[in-house]
Length: 230
Length: 409
Ligand SMILES: Nc1ncnc2c1ncn2[C@@H]1O[C@H](COP(=O)(O)OP(=O)(O)O)[C@@H](O)[C@H]1O
Ligand SMILES: [Mg+2]
Image 1 (cartoon, chains in turn orange, cyan):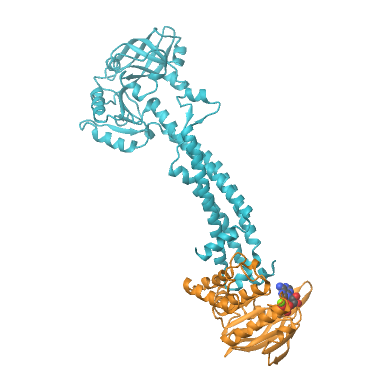
Image 2 (tube, rainbow over the protein chains, first blue to last red):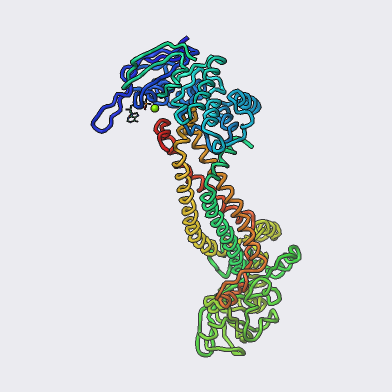
């Protein structure tokens, strides 16, 4: 089964007098259970592509399919519903609601999804345990390290078992040891739950963990490499 | 506690000082509103009671049509026995019979056309403050005595004083010539020029003789003590009226239509002031919530990318506002209740107005009354406008695009 399929995506931004092609006829297919790294130097179009896949932004032309369903023509409300139920997001930093504890941050999205309270508590406890935050459930983001905060964000992204997790430079604010640990966690989750991961990064160390490395430059895919990752 | 409620609550206290300032604005205006409205409604009650107890009473029994066209022929038959039997049936209220005629009242020097009331000397003091306002001489005594009391202004106009004789000339019930000579036994001074100029009172027995009333009169005045329960009393009195006679019972609003109008006029000017206060509070809430939404743009972008809709975030903002508003409501109502209660025990003097108040027969100290209505009506309106003020910031969230929002720091 195909988790993600993009067909001929184009997106142009106008900056002053210049047109910037953030996506220039991008087509890509990602299998279910894939672990893909999108790598490009800054400004290469990684975020634009992830946003198009996640239904956060619309391409100017082209088609996006998630699990076989076309999504680029959905309404705002339908896209919100899609993100809520089928896609998990992890961003670079400041992912969390600062006034909620780790457990509450994880529970909040589940509450919006309509998961009953008892179930919510059980799942939140289990997932925080799985990402290595046992004992820190009642801490607020300000009382956690950057790595711990990213783990909470990951826990929140995967707790409802979405088919697809999109991560946009999740290690950019972490030191290399913490970054390694986070990537190992991603791989574990990918192995255990066969969740599809698409991770945008320009960090070479992160690329090493990918099963498949897609290189972009100026909005185009310039290489697509299968790897035997560490 | 519900997770969304917890989130809203904690969001409020991200900026404790700002939240407290906004809540304090609500609390202050709520306190003020509770006090002012309690005072205002207490004043109205007093104003109504005092006006009605001066002369009109809360209810009057009359012949139908008399109220709008005061013809001497439209009478209440056997008025004294009827008043007597009503007093027996309704021991808790004050009742007195009157007759009314228009006559030419002359002293040696001058004449004035004026209303002459025939009153029951024994019962009139229970339904009117005029007997108590006699400042020279005394009130009427015997029901048949040829006596009169007049107001101070009329006495001046007539150039007559205590002990002088006045001639009363008019036409009787049957149209025949009516005349009497009476002694001035008392002069009253109500401080209200209109009353002191236009009311004269003679004993009802004399009145019936002079104007050929044949035992009848024109109104039975009922003073219920206060306007509470006047409606029930009105229907009770109606049921006690003799079957053979066509009579009506008018309430104070029908008898004194100007009173409610005066109160309404006063209310609308007071409510204009309250309205301005409420709008000021609403703007402070609007400002607070706009800031609070604006500074959370990045955070809202994140949760919107997780699949939260702007509508849900808007409801969160409204919930935060509602919590803040409820805090202001409770604190304001409690503080306002306490302040007003203190004054309701210790009284509230009209500074510099004591003399005027005593002239108008108002008490020198006024005691505002707290009731559930005066306690809640102001704060409830403030709460409502607080919520309305948060609608705009909440609706603005619909313009938010997650990608752009997340770019905000
Ligand atoms: N909202 C925007 N307005 C104008 N230009 C944009 C906007 N978003 C992205 N771009 C431009 O599009 C190109 C791709 O950006 P992006 O997808 O963010 O790259 P990356 O995530 O790889 O750094 C960049 O040149 C960037 O400047
Ligand atoms: Mg980027």
